[in-house]
Length: 158
Figure 1 (cartoon, rainbow, N blue to C red):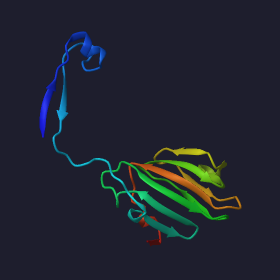
Figure 2 (figure 1 turned 90 degrees about the vertical axis):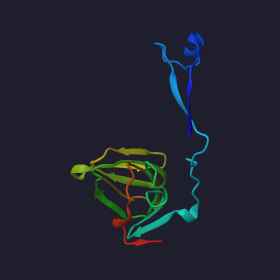
Figure 3 (figure 1 turned 30 degrees about the vertical axis):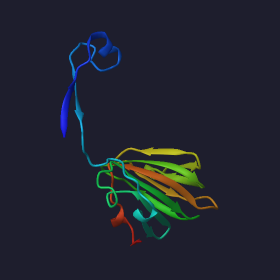
Figure 4 (figure 1 turned 180 degrees about the vertical axis):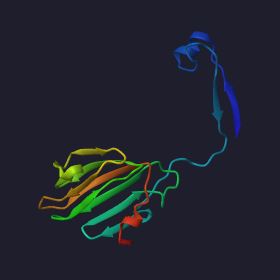
């Protein structure tokens, strides 16, 4: 790896964003060879986790991308099934509801309806869960950060 110092003269450097407003220079790393940072995963890289009333396809997780900063999971819950109230002490979780409707289970026995198109953000440590109150499968994309290996919470993996 070689490193070079990029210096841009005066006002031009400031206008192009190459110099901080107070003057000086910015050190830029110039890499001749490096490991590609972009990963392309396919269906064969995913892992499907199951337990009664829930199927979770781990699209991006510590098992298939050691450098990922999130776990990305597509979750399916059949009608009438419940993902019980729980929390993730150190991870925030965001759900994007793609299909169906459900009752979002909150702390203190409270609930709130959600349906396709809803985005649910749960800070680390907050109680959350779901009950599929609809007549169709509930499908949502879960983004968890920092990433979690969810395998211990499931009965089967394929």
